[in-house]
Amino acid sequence: MTMLVPRRPQVPDWPAYLADRAEKARDPRLARFFAAGTASPDTPIGEAPMVALDMETTGLDARRHAIVSIGVVPFTLGRIALSERRYWIVRPQRTLHAESVTFHHITHSDIERAPEFGEILDDLLETLAGRLVVVHYRHIERLFLDDSVKARLGEGLIFPVIDTMAVEARFHRQSWLARFKRWVGRPPASIRLYDSRGRYGLPLYQGHHALTDALATAELLQAQVAHHYQPEMPIGQLWT
Image 1 (cartoon, rainbow, N blue to C red):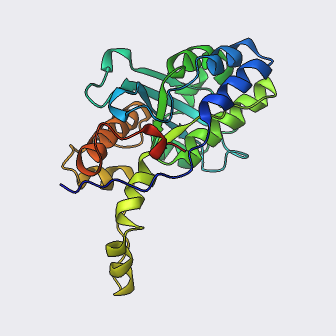
Image 2 (cartoon, helix red, strand yellow):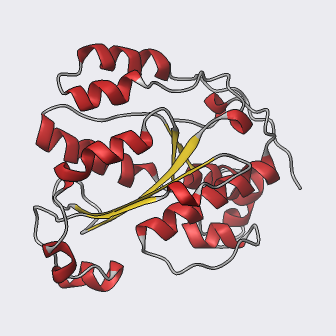
Image 3 (tube, rainbow, N blue to C red):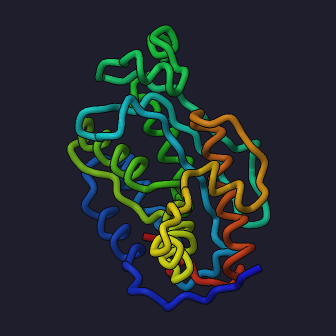
């Protein structure tokens, strides 16, 4: 087991940002979400309430594609609260193409019966409020949520996240050993969710289901902290 105490980076003042947004938000749902705040950056990660978030989309560009499902799983380093998990299939406002059906197996008939994103927003915000959100590749979940909320409410939804892909990149793409392997011609290590889980001996799950991938992300962060950090590490060293 390799324990690493990283250099303390410049920590964004997320509590102050969320407090400011709580005062300025026009929509009461967003005001309540921001008012719930987040833990101090000095809070040990072992004490932080977290929630893993994953979503399936019709593509990778938040400006042209849409959310079709969302999964969330509350957890801490010591416990995953499966009884509190939530999962929504969402009816996109943009066209559902055949390629995306093949990828995430959500069909036209599924979305015809599904609520529109605005109809599940209250429940989603309530589940995320006050918890530190954990994702695998923040440029999907955070950007798509921000874009979807702006399209409906005219104001965005930005909050701190821990990105397990970025954590994995720190050890397997950015370390001196990883750079040396690339220098001698070896391909870079995959930091995809399921390849990353394999390095820690975590079980293989069927991918591209938002709830399963949220669970997989929660387990991955638990393993990353156990292998590379300590429960006493401040969350400000991992969030972004």
